[in-house]
Image (tube, rainbow, N blue to C red; front, side):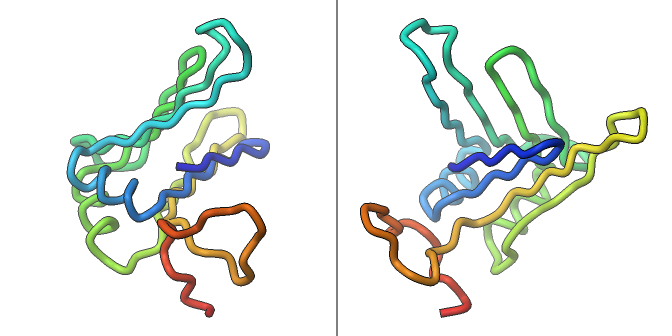
Length: 123
């Protein structure tokens, strides 16, 4: 699962295997280590839950994106590419969340394995 953060936007992209894991277990987690200490990492998780709308949670070193179970089931079992939600933060700010299936690039890139990505519909 890839994560992209830019300003107040958060984007998660999942491979076919990760979509299957999410569909079957209701959760998928990835992490990145920034240093040698155990505290020097960031963990990000996508989880399905019994709710009405996409939500996020944050605590030091951990990002959780929560997707309603029914929405997750439809997304993982269909051709639907992604899910999105603008979450109001107050003070005229929003967090834009996008969760999508990871497609193969239009042109192959050297050193990048895209064998588990979804076939690009544009090719």
